[in-house]
Length: 249
Image (tube, helix red, strand yellow):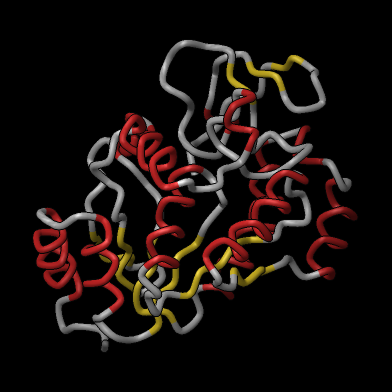
């Protein structure tokens, strides 16, 4: 697959074509477009459903995750379990040690607790730079984004052109509701992170404000960045905190 003369038009066409298909058909269509197709998983419940379909149908899609160095032990165990169950390899992309050292020298190793600036810098070192390496050479990027995850994602398309990364971004679960995802998991024996049952709607990193347990009855905060969540939350250490607000990522 080569970059189209009008990639936005190509994305619109793909978006329309994916709408009427089931998940397996969506992934198969995308995998057949050619080029390097990458699925980035955080091992959350949505991502596990996509990984199951990739593995069950032996699709030529690279499954990758960001090994930030601060993953929950439960997440690390789930990576191994998922690889074994679906007979596939999940590539781990880690931050560079030089970047971690530079961050620690400026903010302190756990400086992300202190300010929005430090949180964004941590994200850059542990997530964005590894993500750039994971997507290098890719023509299509598959994610687990859903419209029901947050108000900001209510208009999530099945396909869109990512001008920053110069690739097509595909969201095959865009129209799936959480109850449908849970039913799929139950019916198909999909392994999921036990932290979901403990109140974590999003599983990202340990000892950082990216993953929180919610004790509110409203829709869970958008999938990762708890600095955007103004509801009171409790981190895994058990400390109740009100995180400073900041822009969504």
